[in-house]
Length: 178
Image (cartoon, rainbow, N blue to C red; front, side, top):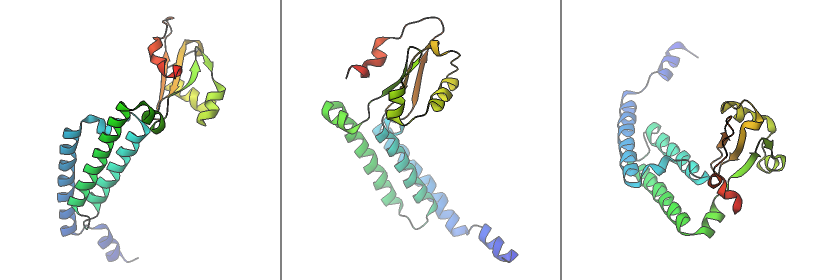
C-alpha cells in the first residue's frame, strides 16, 4: 500500500466527520429526552429483556453516529419504539403474574449456608470455578460465611455473606417459595 493511500485511509473526510459530529450530538440529545420521559429503568438491568434493550439502544446509537447515510429521524423513532416497548413490557409484567413468569427467568440459588448446590450449577451451565471466582470478587474468605449465592434473572451473581453469624433476612430469598 502506498503511503499516500494509507494517509488518505487514515484521514477523515471533513464533511463526513461534520455529519457524524452533528449526528452524535443530536441522537444523544434525543436519547436523553426519551430517558427523561421513560425513566431510568431504560438502562437498568432488572431482567434479561432490559439488558437486551440496552444492547439494542447501543446498536442504534452506534449506527446513527457512525453511518452518515443513516437518518437521525429514523434512529429517534427506533429509540422511542424500543423504549416504549420496554415500558409496556414492564407494565404488563407488573400487572400479570402469568406474563412475568413466562417472560422472565427466575433467580436460581447456587449456594446456601456454605454449601454449593451442584444441581443448580448444572442447570445454569456454570462451573464451580466460576462460582468461586464470584466468591473471591465478593471478598468471601470462607464458604461457611456464605449465606446465599444467587444467579439473578439479569445474569448477575449476588453473594450474600457475613462473618459475624448474622442470619439472612428470609425475604431476600422469597423467589424460592414460587
